[in-house]
Length: 107
Figure 1 (cartoon, one colour):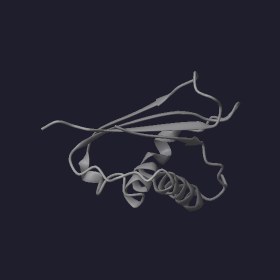
Figure 2 (cartoon, one colour):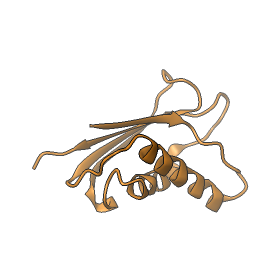
Figure 3 (cartoon, rainbow, N blue to C red):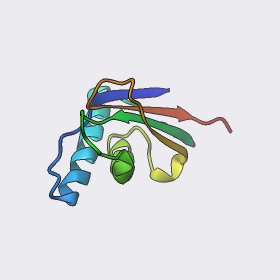
């Protein structure tokens, strides 16, 4: 299982394109920094997050950018590998935090 934890990216709320690019780039960089090796088969991706205090941010709006970051960071080879995707807001995590777990599925 691959586990990637990192601070929730700060983005310019006025520009949706910048927002998606920021998420994708932060995830890509986190994969590279950790030396994540690509999973070849079908995978399950579980994303838990907690935005900053008082934020109404929803990761659901940015899930595609996070998944794209996993591809560009070489954690997975392509989006079609993702067979199960779960996203939860977890108030037990530190504020402004995101955790991504990638599990290869058995055949």
